[in-house]
Image (cartoon, rainbow, N blue to C red; front, side, top):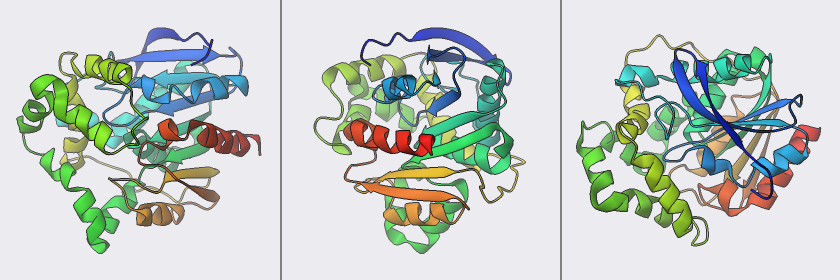
Length: 286
């Protein structure tokens, strides 16, 4: 992350406490970066400097259940409404009424849901390889290839077994999942050690998987509206988890959207950081 210094603090939001990294101009516009599974704030290591250089106050939380943030017990604590409200609380805690929201993977799902149901909090939306909540289920039904890519989601519904398998042999399977679905240079040994440290925290693995288990939890989820805030979708076309059809269907949920396809895997922001940063920079300028 160059010479930029991150400050870390614990911020109360929506009844829990999140571990949050902050940097950049104190009075700059807010940009919140939301990581996915199985990462933590460090997922955005290649984007932070670029946003700071553009004058943003950059906020990079460990989302609930991850790394040093609170890990409430039970699937019901990880519904997408709860995850969305964590982000609203973060915006409020910095005394702002809007933020640029950038999300990847599960972080993108939270970002989509925020823009669809609480658009007043979103200045602009950047999505990296993440399905709009209304799109994934429908695409799984219509596209067998997406159903096959999503089989791991059904595996995660099994109690306890996923945790046991993933943490066995020093998280060997979880490390392999990252390495086998990315370009050879994406994750270094040093990176994997930092991820392992985050996964090893008490309760982390179950909390992380509970994001998936909450998909079946009973929740009064609001029907998402068509997204009217400006949206930029940046999509790695060699994604092992999400088909290109998802990116195409995502566009139909928005009125003001542009999509760029990138020669990368699911981990597009790590594999093609300069290209991704350039697209984000241009989008935020316009």
